[in-house]
Image (cartoon, rainbow over all chains, first blue to last red; front, side):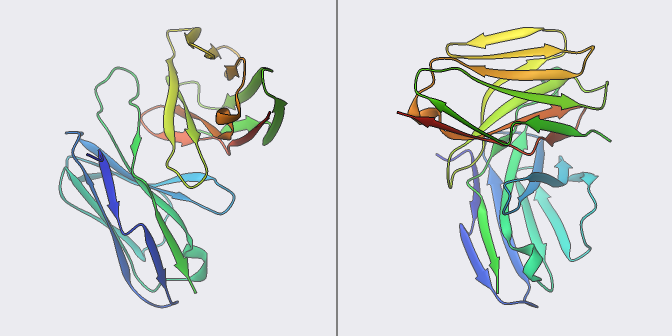
Length: 115
Length: 109
C-alpha cells in the first residue's frame, strides 16, 4: 500500500478556476506538508501541519488554502489559478520526535498545468 | 532563515567513477541533513541522512560527511552505475527542512 497518496496525479485546468488536491498518509505520522516543485526542480515548502494545526506557512499567496480534517489528511485548495501555479505539488509526512529532524516521506506528486 | 546552496547543478561521470555533491548551509542551528534522490517523473526518496552529532555515515556505495564548523556537508557515491542517474537534493533542517537546488547526475555506461 502507498504510504503517502495524493490525488489527482495530473490536473489540467484553465486560468481562474478553483481546484483541490487531496493527500492521505497511512504511516501514523503527526506532521504533513505541501511542497511545490517548479520547472527547474526546486523544492520549496509551502505549508506544514502538526496534528491538524498549522505550524509552517511560507510566503504563499492567499489563493492557496490548506485544510487538515485529521492528522492523516492534508488537502490543498487553490483559488483563481494562475499560469505561474503550474508545477508539481508534493505532499509529504514525517514523524517528529525522532531525535533531531525527521525524514520526509513524499507522495507521488500532482502535476498541475494551468492553461 | 536557513539557506542551502548545492553544487554542482549538473554532474556527468563515467560508470565506475565516483561522484561528489557538495552543500553549504547558513543556519548554525540546523541539526539534520538528509539527501534525497529523485528519478525522472518520480517522487524524491531519502537515500541517506546524517545528524549533527556525527561526522560521517556510510551505506554501501553512498557516504555523507558533515563539517559543522564550516557548515558543509557532502554526498559521495562510489562505483557509480547508470541507475544512479537522477536528481539529488541535499537539505538542512532546524525543525523545517530546506532543500538545495538539486544536482542532476548522469552516469554514462
